[in-house]
Length: 153
Image (cartoon, rainbow, N blue to C red):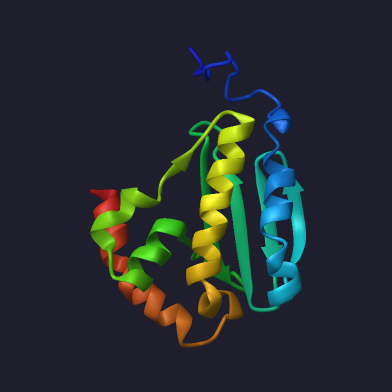
């Protein structure tokens, strides 16, 4: 039996009517203008931005409807990336508040609202990470370990 949302839409349904792709494009346009990123892939559930040093994926979970961000360094030889709650937990020193950064929606209004919150967090806290400085990745990696451990328990 497949999961459905309040409108009866299942996880495999075309979700372009939720407006995720356009809302992300509008909200995260600062990555292009302020940080030199460009869109390398975009669809109804995922938008990937890349600079010469960093990638950032904004996605809408196919089954969970979670709206989240993943960030990693380029080239991505080992597949190491960090999610929103890991980066914020590491940078803000709040690993115990990991669930405070969980956003989920299956309606167009909710998607826009969640994206507005997520982009606000990225704008406020990700500058060093987005610039891809050598000092940002090790500090996030070291501080994210307790967050990853808590999430996997």
